[in-house]
Image (cartoon, rainbow, N blue to C red):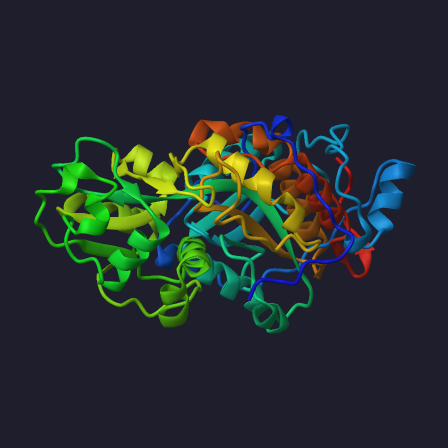
Amino acid sequence: MMPRAVPGLALSLSLSLLALVACGPGSQPSPAAATVVGTPAAAAAATKPAGQTPAAAATTPAAAAAASASPSAVGAAAAPALSVSIAGPFPGEAKNLTGAGATFPGPLYAKWFDAYQKVTQVQVNYQAIGSGGGIKGIQDQTIDFGASDAPMTDEQLAAAKGGDIYHIPTALGAIVISYNVPEAKNKLKFTGDTIAGIYTGDIAKWNDPKLVADNPDLANVNKDIVTVHRSDGSGTTFGFTDYLSTVNADWKSKVGKGTSVNWPGGLGGSGNPGVAGEVQQTPYAVGYIELIYAAQNKISYGLVKNKAGQFVDPSLDSVTAAAASSANAVPADLRFSIVDAPGDAAYSISTATWLLTYKNMNDQAKGLALTRMLWWATHEGQQLNKDVLYATVPPELTTKSEQFIKQITVEGKPVFPGK
């Protein structure tokens, strides 16, 4: 379930504040590589319990006061504290961090962690095994941090062995409707109802009148539609089914939303790359994948009709517009959804991705390394975002993330060294 909004938090985002840059967390590689390893076998290598890490001690009186405030009390408008930067190694910090989870931000995290190792000499091994794996790993304390494209539910948070967990948003992106229809000359147009009908099987042919109404190119394409979905627990699936549950009552009652659902049919693929590959090699297939995978693999993807009745192309600009128009609904714990956002320019299947970390950790060295990585990811790391087609986290949300990072503790003491 999505969390209840916390009274008193009103975030007013302006598009001018949403620069298209990158943000991101760190995961730790096995003491060897700072690149993303996407196999379950690789993820299994990081199964020894990771010492939980602490939070941050502020370096100025003002920062110290902010660090002592409870997250729910923090105001949301100030720009990030750019006076704090992560430059070089820090005495006593761990040299390796291990994380696992979402495939959605995998390309971004690969770029980040390579850059971060060059700055700090800390190796971050991130295993892109799906959001379900990231949530499970952080719950069981088998990794230093998790990653998910779906915020943890209240039940999942309650089942975590190490206590309170913070959600640190690291990037915004688009889930696109990809397809393999050779006859389509123009970009296909989809509505929430046609997407739901395709995945429930009610729309079985590409020349179904409901599709042809928006796509004349399909009038003579008398071909069966092959649906492709994620076979693993996935935040991308959560974002996709969250959208369909929001816009289509039939989908909500019959299938619902979640990181895994009971699909009415179709083929399964592991991770965004798996779904992209199935769509690419299967004529007349349709699937849902992150924008970067469609772009990298030159897979066609369509426009989606938004809440304002406009067919919108997924892009950094339209994701930013969705975030801006949804800002007032963001709760204090940063577990939010931006699907079906209002506004002419908003792309309807926009989503966020988060790093997951314990508030209270057990290992000082890990705490130092993790909080420094989180700070870098939400500040300097953002500058890499545009390179791999992710929208940046708005400054208002970054300010909130700063307070969480500063409150991560080891043995009750804030651990972030402030540099």
